[in-house]
Each structure stands twice: as structure tokens, then as C-alpha cells.
Length: 129
Image 1 (tube, rainbow, N blue to C red):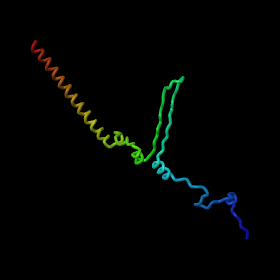
Image 2 (image 1 turned 90 degrees about the horizontal axis):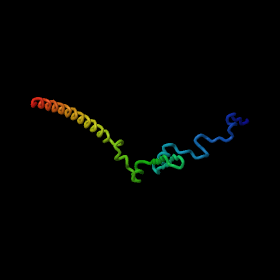
Image 3 (image 1 turned 120 degrees about the vertical axis):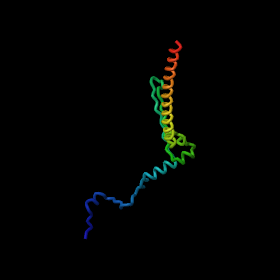
Image 4 (image 1 turned 180 degrees about the vertical axis):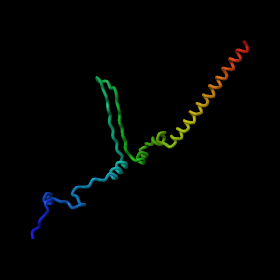
């Protein structure tokens, strides 16, 4: 009996069994993300616009990608006091709406009181004349 191989196997003289590879497998995305967040990564760049050796515009781009724990180790905690990122921002917005409504109410009663005082002054002016 002769060993007959399939035509597909003849096209590939070197076959690696499934699940085995001769080269190292790349890490999956979760491993890469964990490593980046643990160690951190910095991306920096500058864009400059010059006209006749006069600098018109400079844009400095700095991007730091780290985990929250790593950022705290580095002394970075700006998100704790940023009103757009804290839950107290919604409370401030509600308070702002209430204050605006109160100011409008006071302005309305103030203008009504002023109109009444003006009418009274005109009435007094006529009675004295």
C-alpha cells in the first residue's frame, strides 16, 4: 500500500498541528491593556505654524494613559475636583436653575414695585400742583 496524501497537503509542505505554533502568540487585547495601564504610556507631540520665521501658533499635545491607581501614585488627581466629572455637578446645575428663577421673580416684583412707585409719585405730583 502506498501512502497517498491529499492535494491540499501537497500544497503546504510544512504543516503545524492546530493549537501549536512555531512563533510566539501575540498577547490578547486584555493583556496588552493591563500592561499599558499598569506601566503607563506617554504620547507627546508639538505642532508649530510659522510664517516667515514668525511663530503664529503652537499646539502642545501630551497624552498620558495610565490606570487611576498609577495616576494617584504619580500625584495626578485632577478628576476629583473637576465639576464636569463629579456627581455634585448635577446639584450645582439644579441650584443654578433655582437661583435664576428666584432672580427673575425678584426682578418681576421689583419692576412691578417700581411701576407702582412711579404711579404714586405722578399722583402726588398732580395733587400738589
